[in-house]
Length: 380
Image (cartoon, rainbow, N blue to C red; front, side):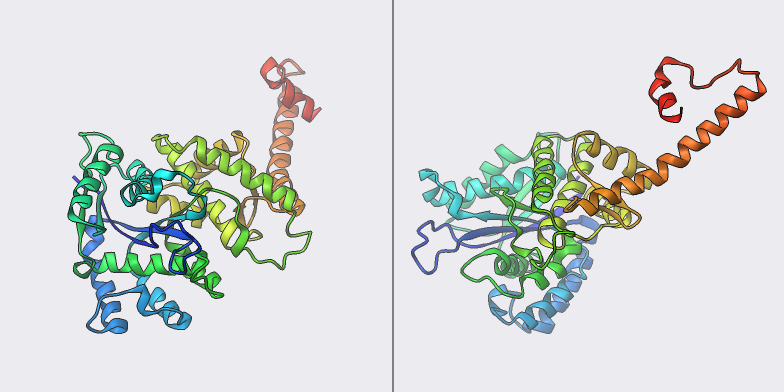
C-alpha cells in the first residue's frame, strides 16, 4: 500500500555548452510529497490558486517570469496546500563526464541523485512525474528507476508519467522549480531570491545540492566578527556534511531522523540566517513531516541531538533552540546553557552524597565505585 504520493517536475535543460545563451547553469528537480489521504485537499487548494492567478490556463513558472511581487503572491497561496518539498539543485558546470552529454544519461544521472533519497525515506512512495522526451525514452526511464531506486519487491513503490496539464500538483512543482531557479541559476537569478527562499522554507523537507559545497550566496553578508567567524563556520559545515554523507545510505529510523534534523540545520545555516537559533518545536515538526509520525521532545533530545554530538557534529544550543555554531558567541552559548544543567545536577548529587555519608557515619559513599571516579573528582 502506498503511504505517500509525490509529484515531480524539473527546471533547466541538458545543455552543457555554457557559451550558448539559452543553456541553464543549473538543473533543478522538485518533488512535492504528501500523504495520499491529503491529495484531494492539496488539489483543491492548488486548483483555487490556478483559477485565481492563471484563470483558464495551467500554473506555469514561466508565466510569472521576473514579476517578483506576483511570484511571491502565488507562492504564498501555494504553500497553504499540505505538501512538503524535496528539491535537488545541480550545478551543471561541475558535470565533466563525456557520457552526460547524451540526454538519456543526463536525465538518468540527475533523477538517480533525487530518486535514491526519496525512495530511501519513503520506501512505499508512488512517484508521478511530468513527461520528458520521446515515448521510447520514457519507457526506458521507468525501467531504470524501477531497477535502481525502488528498493525491493516487498515495497509497493511505483513510478509513472502524466501530462502536466492533467495534474495541478505537477504544475505546482513546475512553479516551485522555476522559483528555485531564480535563486540559483545564473541565467535567471533574481535579487529577490532571499524572499522566495523564506516563503518556501517552512515547506522544505530537503534541499539537496550537487556537488555539495559550502555556498553562502544567500547568507546575509552584513555580519560582523562577533556574529560570524569563517573558520568556525567552515568547520561546523564540514563536520555536518561529513555526517550527512556517511549516513546517506542508512535506513535506520534514528539515522534518518538525525539526517533530517542536521540537513535542516545545514540548509538554514547556509541559505537563511547563520545567526538564528531554531527551536526544538520547529525541528521536531520537520522530522514529523518526513516520517508522518509523532516525535517526543525526549526522543528528539536523546536519540537525535545527543547522538549527533556524540558523533562529533558541532551543535550549539541555548534557551532559543539549536544551530550550527558560526561564532565564538555560539560556542559560549552552548557551554553556558550546558553549565546551567550540569552545575545544579552536580550540586544535587553532592548534597545527596553528604546526607547519606552523615546518616551512615561515612559507611556509605555513593560515589566510591570505580565507574564514578570521574564524577567524584569533579565534585571533590
